[in-house]
Length: 227
Image (tube, rainbow, N blue to C red; front, top):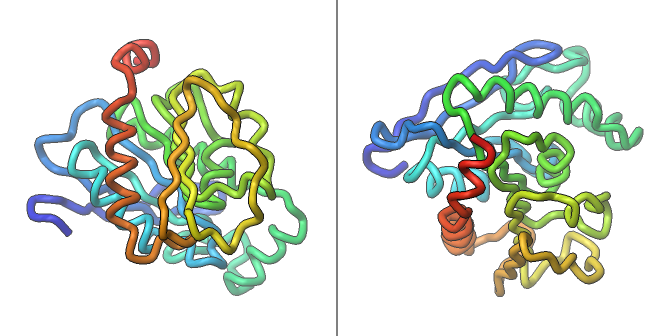
């Protein structure tokens, strides 16, 4: 962790118990704007300590507070079925293709984040990009999707968003099906990171840098409109 960067472990109230959370920040950046990052699927290394999550979180926390969290049954987060192991809990969700409860938990995290910052940038990685999009509220200043499963999941809402959007794809993506043409909209920034696979191994710093650049370019008018 960078010098001067603080990390505070948190317990976030959830539907079935506490969710494990962590706030990264610098003393001088605790202003009214922060960021929230939704991790990837728990059965694909989806937690707060994921390499991509950590790289992006540390970089963003240099400029604004960054809130991380674990989904239900992941890490120290309470499970809706404490009698079942992580795999079975999430395999059941996958089989039913119903993530309504997870989206609701993400919305609770977003609402709870108001104690630390009034406005936020919402970021999601892979599965987390789906959860972030579904949980998006009018309080968000921007939406960033890292390696979103555009061909597998419903991202039809993207062209309708009025806030700045950043879609980041991996040049060597092998886990996801190739999507069709991405929506061409003035508010959507498309970034392809060459030489990166779905897990952005050895390209984490490049990824984090591109996200920082995008966040720094969110128009001031957008901040004023959502304040």
